[in-house]
Structures are given as structure tokens and as C-alpha cells.
Image 1 (spheres, helix red, strand yellow):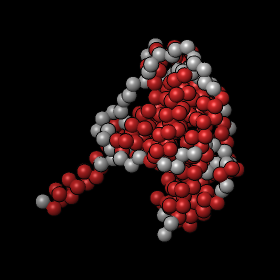
Image 2 (cartoon, one colour):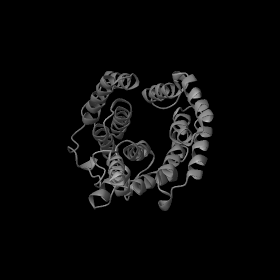
Image 3 (cartoon, rainbow, N blue to C red):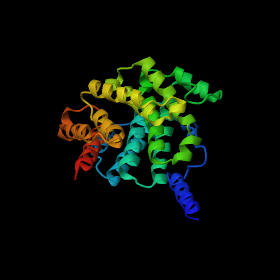
Image 4 (cartoon, rainbow, N blue to C red):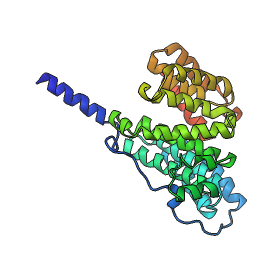
Length: 292
């Protein structure tokens, strides 16, 4: 009886990773949203305010306000990818930083994937391929420099879904999504491996860390990519924050992790590349992890 109860408790723990643990994830592709209409004027003031709100996020409420502002910009000019990409990164931030329940995070992350797909579909070659039946990761060869952000945040969204929304069985069921994220990273490196200070290098670290060894996961390679990302991303907080949180701390390398986290906290926001609100979140998370 004790053994049976223990097994039940273990099974419950394995299933507790989110609402989608036992089924394959699916969502309406981003390009099937409301059809593009003739672009409406977006004033310089509209863009300035949207950017200000996007840079000022420090709470769930301010994240929502920024997302609403960028939704207005994106829907006014649906054939321009930039606003859809900005929406994607802000939705990812909302889910990661300001939502705690797996189902709420999953909603944010899937919306981000759809925004990325909408941005990709502004590329006529990509849109033709997916309308012919290809999946986004199969049609990725059509994408180029203007869709780099969409590819980056699409793969990031998949990684966040695995981290925050799926239990063990859910990860097994949905492992194909990791293969899809890999296809995005391969295409990014084919187009411009140095984009945003080699941000794909860090993503490769996440990929090799997350995948099971039976499907190509490799902790040693993950370490190599994380270390290389830190070396390359000199104006970024993500590589050191992510190396500490995802790799060093779980392996008991506390001194090295604390050095990374302290370095993140010490950076001045004005000297950093990337989204200001993401950098603010990374610093807050680093400070939290450093606290006794």
C-alpha cells in the first residue's frame, strides 16, 4: 500500500507541469488571423508612446498596457513585421515575468508564437509555402533578415512552454516542438549567426540542455554554448542570467552562478542591448536569486 501511494504521488507530480501535459499542443496559425487590410496611418506619436510603454514594463498592468499599444500599431499596419515581433517579445515577457499559473503562461506564449507566425507570413514566399500545407518550421527556408526576430522569439516561445507549462509526459508528447525550434535556429544561423550579438548561441545552449540525450540532448555541449554566449553577448544580460539560472544553479555550481548573477545586477540599463524591460526583469530575477 505504501509503495502504491508513493507511485500515485510520483505520477501526480509528473503530471503537475501544466494543463497540456498529456496532449499534443496545437493552435490556430498566426497567418489565419484577421486578413490584412489596407494599412492605416500610424503617427510618430503612436510609435513613441508604444515604445515608451514597452520600455517601462515593471508589472502585470504595465505589460498589458504596452501590449495593447502595440496591438493597435500591428493591426493598423498588418503587413509590417516589426510590430508583430514586438508584440511577441512583450507577450513572452508577460508570461515569464508576470503570470504564475501554467495555463495563463501558456496563453501568453501561444499568442507570442502566433504573432511570430503573423510576422513570418508578411514574407510572400513563406505565406505561399504554409498555405500549400507546410508547417512554419518546414517553410523557414523562405525567411530572411527581416524575419530574424520572428524566428528567434518563436523558438524562445517553445522553450518557455517546455519550461513553464509542461510536465514530464507533456514534454515527451510535444518533443516535436523542440525539433521545430531547432529548425528555426538552424535557419537563423544560415541567415546571420551574429544577429543581436549571437543570440542564437544562447538558444542552442537551451536546446541541448532541454532535449533528452536520446534525441540529441548534450549537457557538455549546452555548457559550451552557454559559455560562448557569455563571451559573445557583451552588451546582453540574457547569457549570464540564463547560464546561472538554467545551468549552473541546478548543477550545484553556486559560486559561479552567483558571479554571473552579480554581474547582471551590476550592469547599467542604459549601456545594454536588447529590450529594456527584459533587461529590467533579468536584473530583478538575478537579485532575487542572489538574496539569502
